[in-house]
Length: 113
Image (cartoon, rainbow, N blue to C red; front, side, top):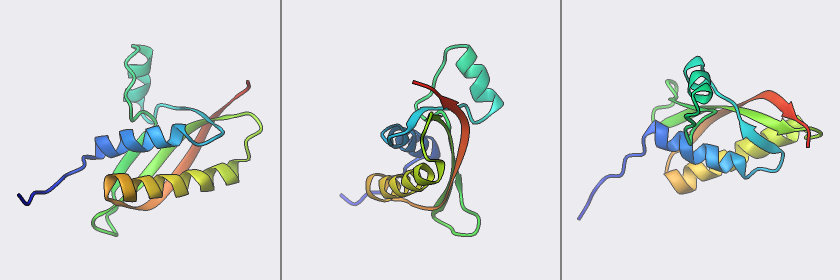
């Protein structure tokens, strides 16, 4: 039976957050908005926390991603940003069936140990 699979932006954000956690040097995700910060205070944590996915207005069918991460002390930021971009694009294409046009990595903290 022919059908169609639709991946929501929230589901894509959750998938990308899980992939980001697998990259060495990423120790956590940070809330991307005030709403997420309040949710964290109230102990409600979403799987897609720290990831914002938006349709790309310039490229229909592609998505822009903003990733808010906390890094381990000593991590080389440019190398980590490149690794995150590559892994997220691969996961979006092969696991989600969508293309990313842009991945922006926002380092919002550094953690020791």
